Amino acid sequence: MWPVDKLSLLQDALGLTGNNIPSVADDGSEEWDKASIAYEAALPYAIEGRDWKFGTTVATLTASPTAPTDPAFDTAFAKPPDLLHLIWVKLADVPVDYQILANQIVLNRSGTSAVTAKYVRAPTIDQVTPTFAMALRCFVMSGIYRGLNEDIPSAREMWQMGEAMLAHAATRADQEQGRRSPFISRMATSRRSPRPLGARG
Image (cartoon, rainbow, N blue to C red; front, side, top):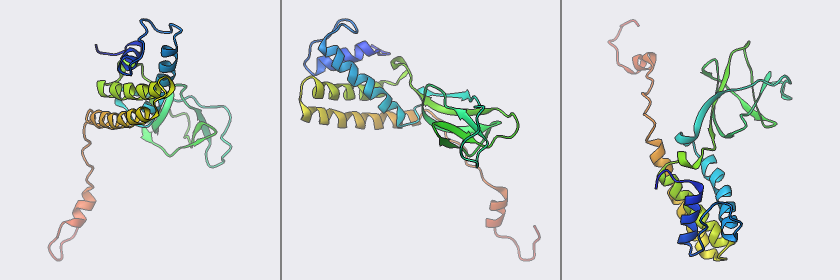
């Protein structure tokens, strides 16, 4: 079944680790509770480390009325509440130098130009790719082996399998983005090209 949801993923993980399978979410069983803890810990970990295309968005930042404590910058912006990993910040659609200070995005702003940010946010499980879901399932199985089955060797092995799956998912996700055409400076090209002796340029 695709896309997968949390209940289906946890049912798969519990079945594959030899445990009782809950028929509904939040049924009060130890199996659900331990698997859910593993899931809620693994999902942000898996998302935060990479620029997943399925979890990216661009938003306009809101300026704080209070200036940054670092005098090198004049404006602070609140991080979007769903931000997991910041990719870039732009001022009037142009990349700008920024820093993270006191959990805020600080930069030098000219006038009232809009400041936007591209970032990774936590997607719902139905938005992820099948390979990402496979990695997440491995991480959940690792948590089940550790917290429910008390099988530490299997927990470690499954975690490593999850990391390998996550790396594979990242490679596949990167292929979704078109390659950028390299910018070639006409002046640099001119300098590299041999010219007849005495030619002016």
